[in-house]
Length: 513
Image (cartoon, rainbow, N blue to C red; front, side, top):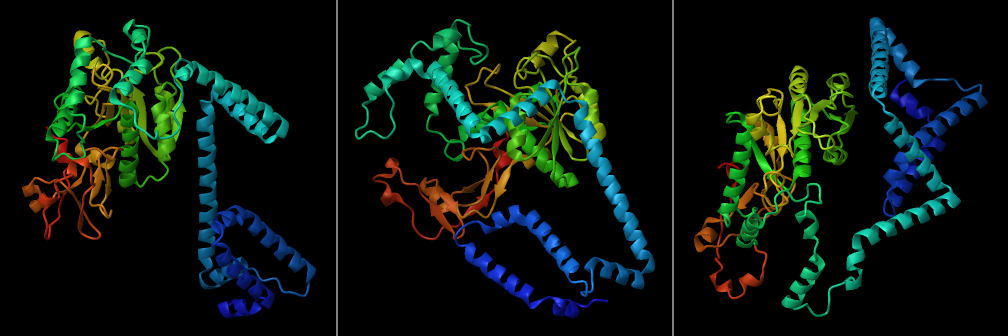
C-alpha cells in the first residue's frame, strides 16, 4: 500500500516549488482583485490541464512506474474487506442510474408542456444574445433600442417636458405656494380619464365623499410610523382590525386563520412564497424549492421566485375551461415542490381555478396551496352568498395554506395596502425576519419593509416614565436618538443615568385585535 510518506517522497521537487510559488502568488494577488472568482472560472480548465500534463508525463517516461491513487485505494479495500468493493461499486452504479433517471424524468416533465411561445422566447432570446456579440449587428440593435426608448419617453413625459427638469438640489428652496401650484400643474386633468371610466382598474372607487375620508385619514396620521407602535397605538389597532376583518371573510369561523398587512398584492404574493420556502426548508429540508403556477398567474409570482431563488414551473390552462390544468400540476410535483399557486380569479380571463381539486392535490402531496385572491378578495365572499354556483376558493378547503387579498382594490382602501392570510400562526411565523445580533437592537419585522410593526426594543423604563420613546441598542448596550428639529430646546428634559434595556418580541401581539 502506498503510504502518505511514500507519496510525499514521490512528488518531484519541481512540483513542490510550483505549489509554493502558486500559494505565494495567490495571497499576493488577493490584495488587488478577486482571485477566488477567477480561480472558480478556471477550475475546470486547470483540472483538464493537470490531467493532460499527467498523461503526457507518463507517456514520455516509460521507465516511470504508473501508480494510481484510485487503484491503490481499491486494491487496499479489496485486501482488507473483500466484499466492500463489490457493495460500494454496485451502490455507485445504482446511484448513477437513479441520477440519470431523475434527470431524464425532469426533462420529460418540462418538455411535455412546452408551448410554441416558450420555444420562440428561447430562440428569440438566444438570437438577440448572439447579435449583441457581433459588432456591426450590436450597433444597429442598440440604435433600434434607443429609438424605442425615445418613443416611450415621449409618450410618457411629453406633457411635462415644458416644465424643465431638476437634476440637483436648488440653492434656494421653492416657496410653499409655488410648490403647490407646480403640483397642481403637473396633476393637470389626469383624473378625468378614470373619472370618465376610461381606465381598466387603477381606481376602484373614486367617489368624492369616499376620497375625502381617505384624505382626512392621511392628514390625521401623516407623520405616524407603524414601526413605533408605542407612539401610535391606533395604527397597530387599524392594521390588526383590517387583518381580522379580512380573515373573517375567508376563514369560515376558524380562529387559526391570521395574516399581516402588506404594501400591495405583489408583496403579499412575495411573502407567501417566502413563507412556504422557509416552512418547507424547516419541515423537509428542501434547499432547492419549486413552485408550480399556471401561465395565467400574476407576474408577481415570477418576481418572487426570481428574487427568492425558487424554481418556478409553469403549467398550461385547460383549453376548454381556461382554468389551471390540474393534471399538469400533478405531473410536475416533485420532492422539491413547496407550493401550488392558484388564482381566484386569474387576471387575464377572470376565471377561478379549480381550487377544490388543487386542494386535494396539495393535501395528498404535502405541499402548500396559495390562492391569489387580490382581485376577488372583497367580491367573491359576497357573490358566493348570492350565487351558490360560485366554487369554494378559501380556507374552507383543507389544502389552502395562504391567500392574498388586496384591500386597495375592491376593498376601496387607499393605494398601497393588501392582506396576506395564513392557515395558522405557526405558518405565519416563517414569514418574519429575525436578527437578534444587530448592534442597533433586536430586529424583527413581519413583512419586507422595516417601518412595520415587528419586534422592537422597548424603551427603557426611565425614559418611558419621562415620556421619551427611544430605541434601545445592543453590542454595546446604549440608546439611539435620531435628532430632528422637534428636539430643539428639549435637551434639558433628556433623562440621564443607567438604563435597563427591556427587549420584548411583540409581533404577534401587535397583529391581534
